[in-house]
Image 1: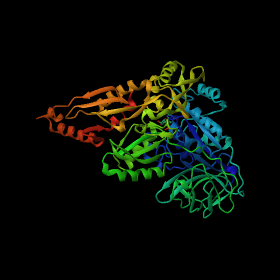
Image 2: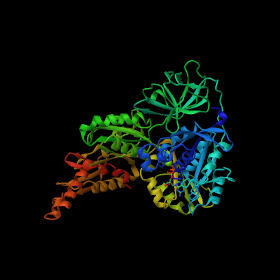
Image 3: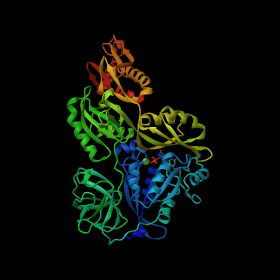
Image 4: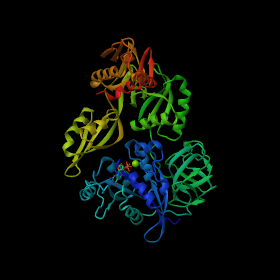
Amino acid sequence: MKTENIRNFSIIAHIDHGKSTLADRILELTGMVSDRDKKDQYLDKMELERERGITIKAQTVRIPYKAADGQEYVLNLIDTPGHVDFSYEVSRSLAACEGALLVVDATQGVEAQTLANVYLALDNDLEVIPVLNKIDLPSADTEAIAAEIEEVIGLDCSDSLHVSAKTGLNVDKVVEAVIEQLPAPEGSADAPLKALIFDSWYDSYQGVVVLFRILEGTLKKGDTIRIFSTGKDFDVTRLGAFCPEPADFKTMGPGEVGFMCASMKELGDAPVGDTITHAERPTSEAFPGFKPVKPMVFAGLYPIEPSEYETLKAALEKLQLNDAAFTYEPETSQALGFGFRCGFLGLLHIEIIQERLEREFDAKLITTAPSVVYKVDTVDGESLVIDNPSKLPDPTRIEAIHEPYVRMDIHVPNEYVGPVLALCEEKRGIQKNMGYLTPTRVMITYEIPFAEVMYDFFDKLKSSTKGYASLDYEIIDYRQADMVKLDILINGDPVDAFSCIVHRENSARQGRSIALKLKRSIPRQMFEVVIQAAIGRKIVAKERNAPFRKDVTAKCYGGDITRKRKLLEKQKEGKKRMRRMGNVEIPQEAFLAVLKAD
Ligand code: GDP
Ligand code: MG
């Protein structure tokens, strides 16, 4: 394929602005999906993605297309996820493109992640074409939104594209714009091979599958390739592209995007961001690579039945093969027994992994409250990395605790600025900037402890702005903070899985709130249950659950038998996600009570 006739592009957007829908329409318009295969969100392959309507893993499709100029082109559409937890996947995918379609919902305008994604695109020197979407909706205001895009982002919108991804209106013009306005890739077919690995995953039949973009040179099936960073060589056993089903190719040249298999056993054999070259005639310079992704949030995963430990371990191992951002290692808890400490990118990532474990592996789990990673200096000069609050050393051994901070941009209509500032201040934020993006929209920048924003910040922001605020954040650094460990005791025994690290100033209030939440989520038992919150030796809160006297089914006595059975079933259902601690039964939701403490 001549490079002049290739276009590599991504679609970027704030979540829900219509990226996946536009991708679907483009695939239909270009005949990539037949009516028979037509499913909404074709690119969102994972069942979970489709149900939740979000894109987790980026996907790629090669689209042969005969343009209005009569020439045959190949378009490589590289889909990207829209959620902040997965922004690292966005920047990887963009590195494989020359251009991007920027989808903006014409009823909403520029949101926090619209801007964040545009910055990523500009960082990668991409040409950006604005696309105003959802013009079928009566509230769409293309003129105002086009002006906003010009003002806030600085993109020319004088003849911008106005589409409805839902009805397909003007989607043909989008495809033509990709050909006319986006640059073709460059690169010589005869140069030493230089290809960028922008994604990889593990397939149980083929081993590691590598998605790559050739920058220079030519790759053939059967070639011996070398991974630049490791110097390891592999033979290419399969070469191809997703059309959208996998199709085999014998050879691929500069500018092309494809997948390959080369008998690689682990994801580490093909690190994302690495460069592929030929063993025989290697390139001298590698692609600069990506920042490695590091899990930022940790939680314990424990089997409900201790006998299922090995099954859970096997499931985690499988998941890890396909998700380099997810990590796990064995840990033991006095309260929960043998389990795993797992690392994630954020709360959505936890939810996704947890749901996949339950759905695909039938695992029954208890998940402990997520925690950020703290750095602790001890009095004897050690530096510790603490990803489990119960592991925090005794206060007398601690010299200083450092916690991660994020820089957060919030976009909000000006009438909601007050509540947003109040929320950020309450969460220990430091205001860095505030300014009008347009006469009615404000951007507010804060530096704020990650621990304060990862739980319920987004929900609170939404509710205090009637859903009109959007946010984007990135982790910037670690800062010293006055943190303490809050312990929870059940009937006098500390439960390590309930420990959390909180700011000293809020510790008593949080202790009371957690104790109360626990009281409400732990069902009454045959005996009294006393719940205490403590900082060191000092008890800061105490709640008690009185024993219940009557069998819950007693009130159905002599009554409706089906109602009674339903009640028993409900109890059984509830038991599934409970763990016995001493003799107290504790349901899953209790473990997450700390998340919801105010
Ligand atoms: P993404 O998060 O950017 O991938 O957004 P989706 O493609 O999943 O779309 C989010 C929601 O907007 C879905 O309910 C779509 O059906 C809807 N949507 C997308 N494009 C349009 C459009 O042009 N018009 C209307 N009315 N709804 C749309
Ligand atoms: Mg989507």
